[in-house]
Image (cartoon, rainbow, N blue to C red; front, side, top):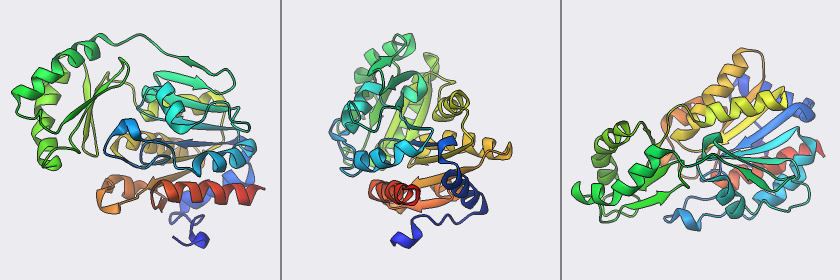
Amino acid sequence: MASADILTPHTPEGKEGLAALLARPERAVVALDFDGTLAPIVPDPERARAHPGAVPALVRLAPHLAAVAVVTGRPAGVAVRYGGFAGVPGLEHLVVLGHYGAERWDAHTGAVRAPGAHPGVTAVRAELPGFLDRNGAWRGTWIEDKGGRAVAVHTRRAEDPDAAFEALRKPLAELADAHGLMVEPGRYVLELRPPGVDKGVALAAYLRETDAESVLYAGDDLGDLAAFSAVAALRAQGHPGLLVASAATPAETPQPLLDQSDLVVPGPEGVVSLLTALADALS
């Protein structure tokens, strides 16, 4: 993507959102997903790290804004470590909303506020190894424990990731339902977590807290659609917003995300370019 296009939304709503951010940045929030948006997708989620240009770009941009928020399904502390956000001058007002907002890390205190483990997640976590084995899906699948608030099954390492993903959809939905949980699908991942908590709920609550006038939200996967919907609802109420799809591989990016976005950038590298262009425009 040429640098001239990085600040050119293709929808009227996106152009209005960008204009509001640039005109009144002190009333704007930039909110970002982590995996696939700030950090490249990797086969092993434990090896994910923020793009090397992400923190420098945020350091330049953040002082102009009301706030920067990272909204992720990961535990907040994990996202902070993998992002390299702690103790960085210029990011004193950064907030990480982990576990879809169930956890929160504030840069100015360095502390994580987190509830206890959800009993349904605890039960599912104990059952999953045998459950996957009985369903013939153990080989190549990988369980990610998200600190007692969610648990995810990854199929990216399976011999046929798509077949494994589809084969597990219904059984995992039934397992989740039995324990009062829901299943959130992503790219080669099925996450089991409590209902009523999503990125849209987390984002909307944070925007109310900051009394933001406008918002930019960037994400890459199905879990980000809830945040997209929250921004769309705010736009209907007169609050400008810009929706950005991080699409490192457009063929793997969910079509609904592309359809609802105002601007598509080429993955974390494109997100960093966008943040840098915003910082340049506000400097």
